[in-house]
Length: 158
Image (cartoon, rainbow, N blue to C red):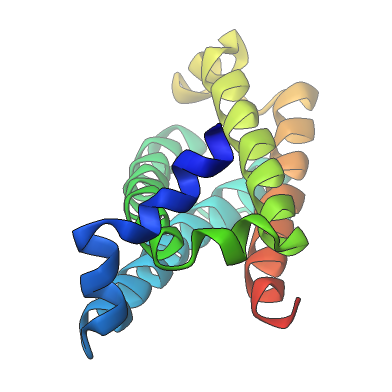
């Protein structure tokens, strides 16, 4: 039933317009890539800093700014992604790379939720050094977002 509902997205006016427009799909795709760039750029900088690989900048000042950039990029990617999906939902639902990307995205979102609920995160924002737990979540974040990027590119080749 869910699959049928998702496949029916291809019949919407917006999906039809995106398929027929010479600029609609490229603009939405570009916005999706911009969202990914904002998200990954901020996440990579923050995660590398949490891991101690880079040492520039006070984490209590960097973390809120980078988190906002990452959230903005995530919001843009999560808004444009379903629009891109609606153009060919049956194709994407049969694409193992796309399904892998969704599974990895769910794990990455759960990791974000976990980090922001940890008292260690609040302590970091108050100027304390990152704990081992935050470093583990940063490493997991780094690996997940890079895997999501790889799976996203892999979609075109499956």
